[in-house]
Length: 135
Image 1 (cartoon, helix red, strand yellow):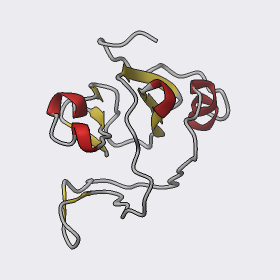
Image 2 (spheres, one colour):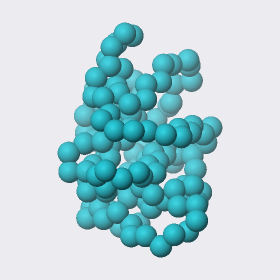
Image 3 (cartoon, helix red, strand yellow):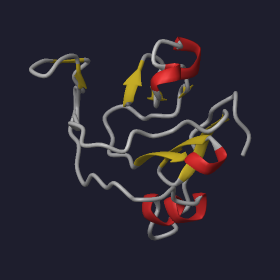
Image 4 (cartoon, helix red, strand yellow):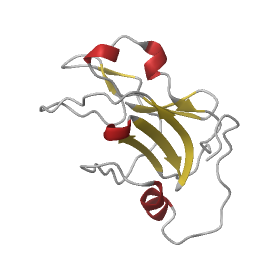
């Protein structure tokens, strides 16, 4: 699950059956990295062989966390964009804004590839500041 939170935070949760109720495993975020009222490119990457989760904003990596690799479910599942599916018929935590151009990839993108997508013209811009992460 990728969602926003207080303090201009970006959260990325992923789980398997073993971590389904482990809130400390789900608590992966980067605070103070989003700009209000502006378009931004955000990317969440899970590198399963290495157990690495990464968050990127406008091509810059803003957070990384490594755990033992989890087994991603290989089955048909419903995808919810802009909310969290709470049941087969309901959603919660609705995103209050606009979204555009979703992409899903079959393998984890390297940071340099995310950077080329998030900042395709190589414009000079400041990296979002996350005081808890140094790339």
